[in-house]
Length: 209
Image (cartoon, rainbow, N blue to C red; front, side, top):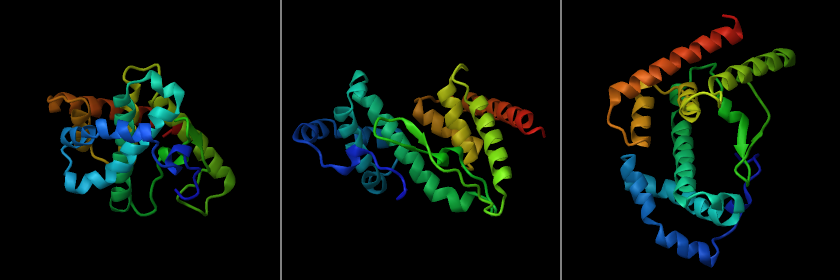
């Protein structure tokens, strides 16, 4: 992360207006932790900085003010929580010799857009031509899986990212239940399983396996 360009709002303190706004909406952090069944003693310190970043983004970037603050808040904290679990689980879950996550090829800039970073496969001895070929195929695979014209493209992207990071279908289904405040685990698990089948089908088509 140290090599990434940091967003402008993360490098400055809160303005007085933002400080008052943060105080008024502070209970959202506890609502979020309660929604996702997170222990406040562990998670408050992890989420407070992303919460303040959400406040600053909401006030600083004019185009975000067309949205409700809660939308910025949940998106920012979801990203922070995902990064935390990814960092905590990467060594435990990724096999030796490993895989790489498509999400690692991007970082967020100050307007919320995602900008491409250098691509570096796990195998550093792979020749450049082979790297370029795999990268092109991988991008094709990923983009076909999360085609924005498909129904629930955002959910499919969430599922795919978690699968690539090593989460089980049970864990993904539970995350989605919490995210959408649903209680039908069987239906959610079935949906994840069907999407995984489709991902595998696309993978075989793209890579010719």
